Length: 181
Length: 181
DNA sequence: TCAGCTCTTGAATGATATTCAACGACGTCT
DNA sequence: AGACGTCGTTGAATATCATTCAAGAGCTGA
Image (tube, rainbow over all chains, first blue to last red; front, side):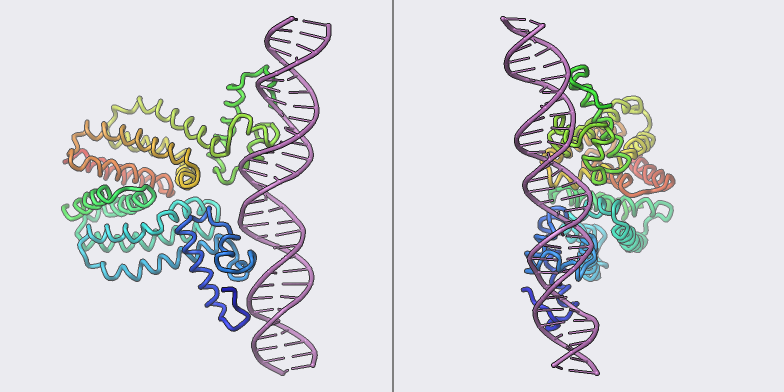
C-alpha cells in the first residue's frame, strides 16, 4: 500500500514499514533481508525507507524495541508463576526472535546504536531476573553469577535449535538450582 | 610476499593466506574484513584467494578449524586439572576468538558448511564436557542439561565482555554445582 | 494562487563478493 | 632445446548490496 502524502500520518506509515520489517527480519533474518526486498514488501521505492529510518540498523533497532516491548507487556501475566514456568515462558516467547539474537551480537560489534541497545537489554532482563531470584530466595552471594548463567542459558537455547525436551530439562535444572539453596 | 609459481607448494601458500585471514578475522572480525583487505594483507590480487578457497565462508571454515585444532591440542595439558580451572582455561583460550562466536552463529543460518561445522563443534566440545563431568561424578540424570548450561555459559562469557571477576564467579558457581551433588 | 514543506522516486555512488578471460611461468615429454 | 598443457595470477567485468542525490509531486497554509 504505497500511500502517504499527508493522508496518512508519518507515525502510521512508519509503523507499517516497521511491521513489514519485523515480519521479514523474523522470518528470513536480518542479513537475508535486503532493503530492496523490504521496500518491495511494503510497496514503496527502495529508498523511501530512508525517509523514515536513518539506517538498516535503525530499522533493526525499531524492530528489536517493538518485539521487546510486546514481550515485556505480556510478561506481567506470568511474573508471579513458579520460576520454572516463567523460564519456559520466556524462552518460548523469545523463540520467535531467535534469529535476531545472533544478529544483535554481530551488529553490536559494528553499530554503536545496536551495542547500546544490547547492553540496555541485558540491564532490563537481568534486573527482572534478579527480583525473580531474590523472591525465590537465592543466596545473595551467588545471585550475580546465577543471573548471568540464566541469561546465557536462555540465549543459548534460542540460538541453538533445541527440542522441547532438552529445553524443559534445562529450565528444570536451573529452576531446581534456585528453588533449593 | 606474492610468491608462487611452483617454487612454493600449494599447501604452503594456502597456509600463508590462512594465517593472514586468521589474524584479520580475529583482530577485526569476519564481517569487517573484506576479501580485498585480506588479499592486500597477503600481498596478492583480490581474486587470487579464490584459487585457494572457494568462498569467504570457506576461508572462515579453515580459520575455525585451525583455531579449534590449536585449542584442542593444548587442552590435553589441563584435561586433568580441577574442573573450575579447566573451565577458566577454556574461557581464556577461546577469548581470543570471541568475535568469531557470533559470526559462526550468523553464518550458520546462511551457509550450510558453517552450520555443519557448528554442530560438529558442539558435538566435540560437549563430548569433552561430558567426560569431565562424569569424572567429577555429576548425577547422570541431569548431566545432559548441565552440559548445555555449561556450554551456553561459556559462549555467553565469550560474546559478552565480562571482566575477570565476573568470569571467575561464574566458573566457580558452575564448578561448585558439579563438584557437590 | 503561490510558496514551502513533506514525501516519493529513478538514477547515481561506492563497497562488496564473486566470476571471467587472458596471460605468464613452470614442469614435462620429446 | 622446444613445444605443450597445467597451475597460478591478474585486471577487468558482474551482480548485489546499502546508501545518497537531485528532481519532482502533492499537500498545506498564506
